[in-house]
Image (cartoon, rainbow, N blue to C red; front, side, top):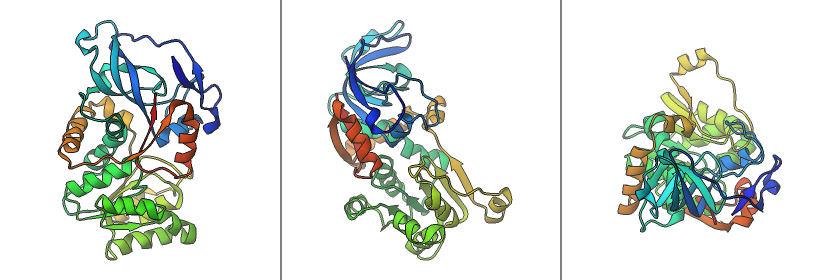
Length: 331
């Protein structure tokens, strides 16, 4: 089969298509002929070996696939043969065939387009847990969604709107992206990256509080780092919660003293989807996301399809903020 193989860690240039042996499913696994593979910003860290889980070479990146089951491993239900599924995988998604664990595979039938299914299974489930599990967003609260035009952000701001947030403040870096998130239901659209560049953390705080009528905000979904993190923390109201789920700027934020948390009654949390999955956090999230999508309450935003051989281009576009919504590779 053809697969994108990383043979040395680095930037987009290390993503090269090679012919490799077909993978073989083991116990509790199935083999899927890949229709589309999801591309996530975390993949750009994986190819550098700078993400949370250490990587080993050679590496086939990719954490999510949509496709049809063509083989089952030992002890796996053979009735799944021929079924169309979306699945989370530890790696190996950027390929024509992928081994998928049964435990992180969801049957989707024939009606849901592959890119839309990919938009839900990793980024959509992440958005669901950021609001439901990490910050426990309540009705009427002011919610800030950073990188709101991205894969997680486009789902998160729609969920916040559907779940009766009092005010949804979305940040996006270009006029086109700001138009997209406004169309998705954001009450206010800002550019915190421009604020950070112009005035640092204080400017980010001021932009966010101004967007909330001068008051502190209740929930922040943050994946940028640096002064965007610093200013977002400063913009939190008492009992406000900030959850970190990425570090796109590759710059760490401030250190926060325990006494500062006490004095402000703020909460800072981290989120990595692997931990939610380990506690059975896929099924309920996917059930709700699929139902909302099929009923029209949730609209996955598609950010473009790339050929498998153009994986390097896809990563370059992601890192340069040229994409909006869900990006996929067509196998």
